[in-house]
Amino acid sequence: MRARYGVPLKVTAGITAVGAAGLAYAAGFEARSFRLRRVTVPVLPPGTRPLRLLQVSDIHMVGGQRKKQRWLQSLAGLRPDFVVNTGDNLSDPDGVPEVLDALGPLMEFPGVYVFGSNDYYGPKLRNPARYLLEKAQGKYGLNGNPPAVGAVHNPWELLRDGFDAAGWLDLTNSRGRLKLGGLDGLEIGFTGLDDPHIKRDRYAEVAGGPDHSADFSIGVVHAPYLRSLDAFTSDGYPLILAGHTHGGQLCVPFYGALVTNCDIDKDRAKGLSTHTADGRRAYLHVSAGCGTNRYTPVRFACPPEATLLTLVERP
Image (tube, rainbow, N blue to C red):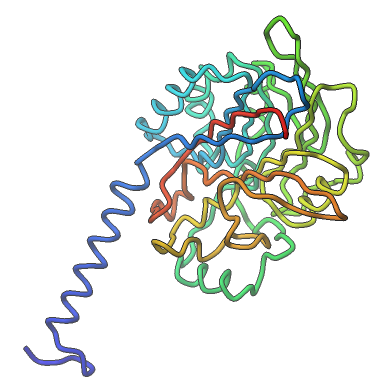
């Protein structure tokens, strides 16, 4: 076969076929291959019983995603002690009823939530290759971005009202406390931030450290920007929960994430790690989330997930 631009046509056809197969796998299989990650975190005060915390994040619901809805509903069978939703529930202005339906069984349990940028604003179509290149080069987004001009308003108020009606705590730049079931009547303190990715975080409004009248306290934020992680850690929070990164979404096998969409390092794009600031250390869990932007519905070497964190006594 003749060469085109110096590349044999057989080679060109082969590369095209491999690319098409990879795209079909990433969009048709892996993006819908939902799974549960299980993590044990030694953070509780001595004498505290183990707690089962279910974290859901980055659902990015689009109309008609029935498999995702059924999977989210099935997570109620884990019987968690409480649920933490770290934001970006929407990727469609009409997705609120489906989010509330999917999370309905989980809202039977105590829970808290923060919002992400896609709860407030609909995504915009852009070239994913350009996006990856700009993020990899660090050309923007290291301190967060203002919402895009002309962005679609998502009906986040309806989502908030649904969560609030179920008794979940709104941690938008605020503090709160959950009393868990059981004979011990444990109380968990929470401090949450609005999304740093669009510069809505206001840590000064919630500063002051953990709620010492609670049995244990957790910091919650959608996007794990270093300024937020530093603030929580410096104030003495033993555990911080975040989402936003999608775990890199398109990863390289045996290497990991190429981008994080914020200023956290790629090695901590998902899973459990630690964060240090001002001589203090906190555990950090970043969820890879279970959805994608509606315009980039693919995942590779980074399946969609929720996480069941079992909190146990610290050494």
